[in-house]
Image (tube, rainbow, N blue to C red; front, side):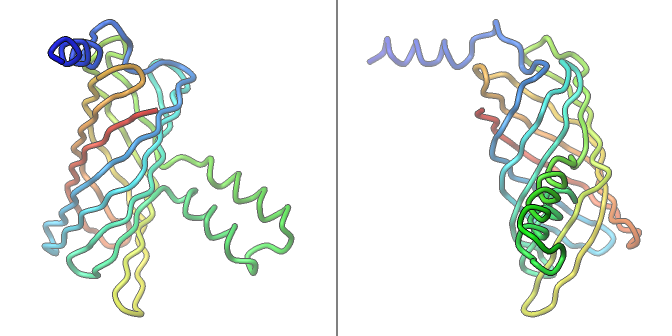
Amino acid sequence: MRLFAVLLLFSLFSLSLKAQYAGQFQLGVATEANYHWQTNQYSITGGVKANIWISDFISLNYNLQLGADSEYGFTANSGLGQLLAIAIAVDTTIIEGKTARASLAILSAIVPEGFSIAVNPYSDWVIIPYINPIEFHVLAKDSHRAFRIGGEVGVKLSFLVNDPQTLQTKIGLRYLYGKNRWGITWGLSYMFL
C-alpha cells in the first residue's frame, strides 16, 4: 500500500512535462468569487472552462459558470459567443431553419471570451496574464432579469500536476461596461483534459 502511495505521488508531481503546448485543448472545472466594492455586491460561481492553445504562448479562453449573487440570487457568466450560441440554438425566432440556426450557433460558440499569454510556457509553474474583453452576465431574481457586459484583466498561475492535468489560480480586475462598476475576481480551476 505504501509503495502504491509513493508511486501515485511521484506520478502526480512529475516535473518533466510542459504545462501547455500548441494545439492542446484543455477542459476543466472552475470556481470564482467576485466582489464589486462600489455596490458591496458579491457572487460565487462554478462551472466549466476551456482553453485552446494556438501556440505554446497564446490560448483562447472559454468559460460557462452558474452561481449565486448577493443582490439578485442567481447569476450566470460566460463569453458572449457561448451565450449567443445557446440563444440561437434554442430560440427559433432568431433564425428560421434548423441548418442556418445550427451553423450560426456553432460559429458563435467559437468566439472566445478572451485570450491568455503564457510568460514562461516551458515551466511547470506558468505565469499567464489574461484579458477577457467580452464577458456576458445574466442576473435573475424572481421574474426580474438583468444583463451585463463586462471585461476582465488579470493573471493566472498554472501548475502542471501531470500531463494534461493542471491546477490554476487567478486574480483579476473586472469592469461592468455602462455601469462604471469595478470589481475584483479570484478563481481556482482544475484542468483535467
